[in-house]
Image 1 (cartoon, protein in one colour):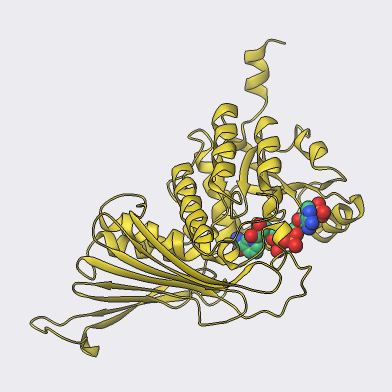
Image 2 (image 1 turned 180 degrees about the horizontal axis):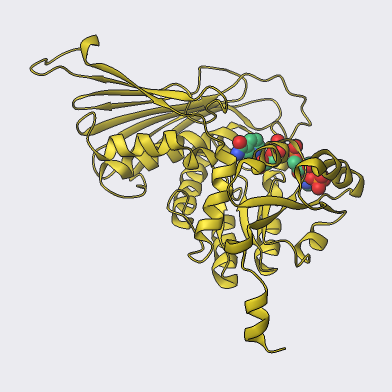
Length: 363
Ligand SMILES: NC(=O)c1ccc[n+]([C@@H]2O[C@H](COP(=O)([O-])OP(=O)(O)OC[C@H]3O[C@@H](n4cnc5c(N)ncnc54)[C@H](OP(=O)(O)O)[C@@H]3O)[C@@H](O)[C@H]2O)c1
């Protein structure tokens, strides 16, 4: 059989759907596996853990949702070698992402890798280089970028719904009481809020500052960061100010022990947009974007008469993230979460950690 005929007989992932393997069946892997059946293109066919028992337990949990069986592997390398896996979802702890994503790309697998793509910008460059060389798709798992609410927000800013965007205020905080050995408290696993949740407000500020000038994202020209490093040696509370070439400013906040809410508020020359639930909108109830416009001729304050609410239907954003891979495999990246975007985000997170003198023991 010649190569051409063989290619004709084997349907491409675009034709037959994308066969997904999950690497690192922990907490977030469950959320991805729960939502994958809601994607238009993907199905779960394999899972790998450092422990075959954990892989088998995960496969058993999702066996009913799979149209064919789910292969379980006790090593990531075995999953990467599985010819029946087209794409992998890397759901391991931060410090493993570079190794896992590069191994996956070199094995010819398309990759969605959880955020942060790498602990620092150098790691992001290494992963992007591996994806480019292998000719595979790569996206960092900032799932909110694939939600229609985010698309709507970008559209509102681009279309001048609040005039000229001037300031972005974005936060992702929670108050957790975690044991010192938990990955989020452990410097050896690149713990702390900046890498866990700080990347969300930074990425949103960059996205929206970009939308305001007709770009997919913008990178800040100045950065000032502050934060508090707790007893275990990772940041528990941090905030930062960013300024963009356009003159747009941003204030971003993240915390793992203090909860001041998680939202995006945009201030423009003609009003304000508030997104109450920007990162994890409900998958059952949908979400909403509030717009308050400055009334015509009004020079101060916002009139309630000019307020509007945009209802956004519920969506499975992890499934949409999987569909984006199916749609953009040939290009290698998607507009929602491009390689250069990840490189730029990592640079800001590096600056933020440098500003608070947070260096991990392995750096
Ligand atoms: N996008 C989102 O909504 C979202 C939400 C939460 C987390 N995340 C990201 O997803 C990633 C995983 O977070 P998670 O909360 O799911 O983590 P987790 O449950 O603590 O661990 C995930 C997997 O990582 C491996 N692992 C755990 N500890 C390890 C260690 N010390 N050394 C090497 N590997 C280890 C394990 O895989 P094995 O079974 O193979 O040992 C584990 O199943 C993080 O990078 C996080 O930032 C994203």
